[in-house]
Length: 297
Image (cartoon, rainbow, N blue to C red; front, side, top):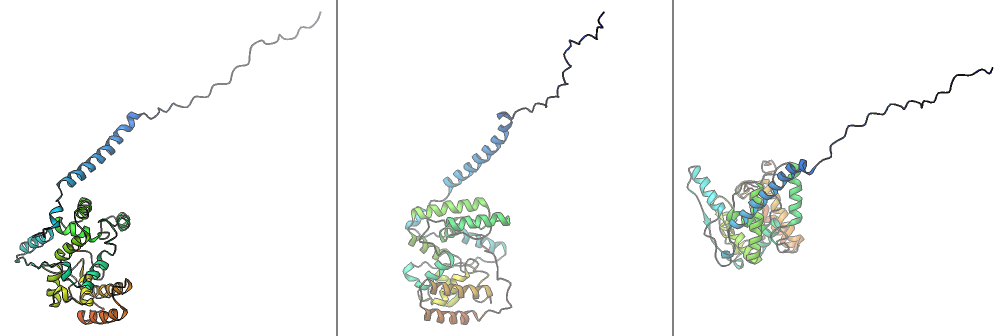
C-alpha cells in the first residue's frame, strides 16, 4: 500500500497588510483666498479714492498764466510760526520779470536745484526712483528728487511736512503746472516766491537783503551764493559763517564753468569773490555741513 503524504494546501498565501493611506489634505479653495483678495482690493480702492479725491480738489494752475499769486502756503506758514513765537510776521518781496534778473544768477539756481529743468515734464523720474529706493532703505522720506516745478508747487499750495500724501499731491500739482504754464513762466514764478531768508521771498528781495543790489546787478559769485542757500536759506545765510554754504557756493561756480555758462577767467574771479563775501567760513564750523531741508522737500 502506497504511503500517502500530507495533503497539499489549496489556500492562497495571506496578503501583506495594506499601508495606511496618507491623510487627505483638503485642496485650497477660492473661498480661503477671498479675504486676502478683499483686503488687497480694498487697500487699492482706498488708495485710488484718496488720490482721485486729492486730484479733483487740488488748486487749478491755469490762473497763474497771467496772475501772480498774492501769497503762498509757505508765506502763510512762516507768518503763523512768527505769531506763535510772539513775533510780528516779516515779509519782503518784490516781483520782477526774468529779464530783470542777471543771467548768471538764473543759471546758478537752475544748475544747483534742477539741472534737467528744461528736459523733464515736472518730475525727474530717474531721480525720483533713486530717492524712493533710498527712502525704502532708510525707512523715511528725505529730501531729493524734487524738481524746480515740484518745489514751486509745494511753496505755492502745500505744507512742509514729509508724508507720502503730500508728496503725491506735489507730483500731481507739478504735472498741472507743466500742463498750464510755459517753462519760462514756471521759472519766473519760482524765482519770485522761493524763500531766501527770514521773511524774504523772491530773488529781488534776496539780492537786496543779502548784497544790497537789485537782481539785475547780481554778480556770478552773488548768484552762486544765493543758489547755494537753497533749500535752507534761514540756516545758510551769508552772515551765518556756514561752511556748507561756502563749499556749495564754490561747487555752483564750478558747475557754471563746467556747463560753459561762464569762462575759466570768470570762474576764477567768482571763486575769489565767494571767499570775500562769506569771509572764508571757519573750517571749524561744521554744524550745518549735512543739514536737512528745513522746508520738508
